[in-house]
Length: 200
Image 1: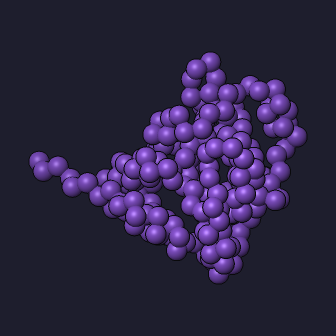
Image 2: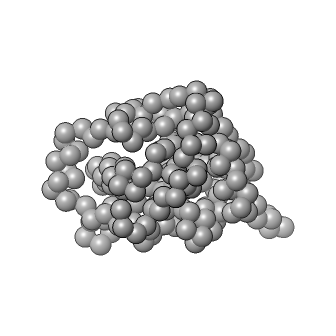
Image 3: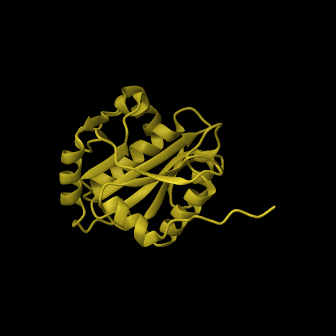
């Protein structure tokens, strides 16, 4: 049996696509990669983000240790560990390459030395493109989202792209905007010299 040819996405192409409002998804673990630019587009307005009061208490109680970029590939694999996933091996390796270049980032939640939740995405200029999240402990992914928003706000990011709006994201203020408005916001965000790491 012949092995399937890898179809990883060149990092330069991937970043160029994000800058134009497009992102890739795998159609199955052995499927091909397709590109999407939804209309309407989901975003999580950083200025309007709000965490439910109960979650605020969880954050203040420091039930989870939050780490940044210490287990990027592990977060991706945990996000892909479900019955149906668009995070194929080709997609995973493409984003691991972005991580090595400093554009792919993970926000992780840990308990007793175990990775129990997190999210990952892509940072470009003043925009952060959220890709997926997971949790194996209650509130673990939500705490990671709060930590992400705090980090983006502190470092001058102006756009948090969620692609679509799920009920989970809606509770935090997630909303949909027309694609034309999204592209205008993206165009304004890209020239900003924001850094995901380093001092705020």
